[in-house]
Amino acid sequence: MEQEQMDAEVRAHIEADPTLGWAREGELTPGQQETQTAVALSRTLYIVGKWSEEIDRLKAEQEAHLERIEAYYAAKMDQAQGRIDWLLAAWQQYLRSVNRLNPKVKSITVPEGRIQLKKSPDKVLWPADDVLVTKIKAAGLGADAIRVKEEPDKKWLKANDKLQALEIAVEPGEVKFYAYPTEEV
Image (tube, rainbow, N blue to C red):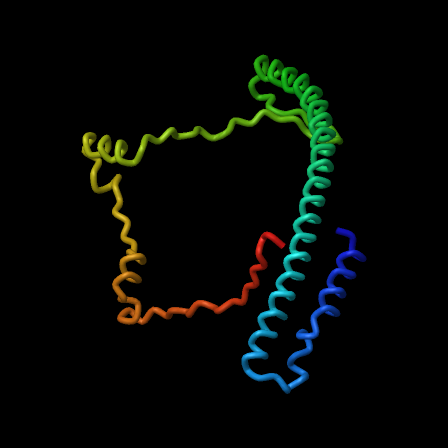
């Protein structure tokens, strides 16, 4: 919805509703005041709903635009990365062949940078903890290879009202205000 159209619609709702100024009048009975408050709140939530729809529309437009931009640059970066990979693959093959002939040569340095072969640390492929504990016990390594971890059961402490006995502070939850316009605005 265009900005001017939204502004005009909001102005029309405010002008059509004399109850938006009920607090200034002071001559209303409590029943009239309650009715007019409900009408004013309804109109306000209607307007909030319209603006929420506008925000949702703008977010969708923004996301679509960003997706197109991200796709464009992702394709450009993939193309550039493909060129880098192609260039470096030849140099990797060259350095590996030199390293096979002379294992002491692991890098080549030039003023613009360096290429290097580097062995990564060995990766231990651990089995599941329960399987590992069984294997440790079967091998007789027991106490040295197995540790027991103590940790508090916070869920139980909270459920059984034990926090005060342990002098643990509890921060009360915050009361927040929310407005929920209906989706059918």
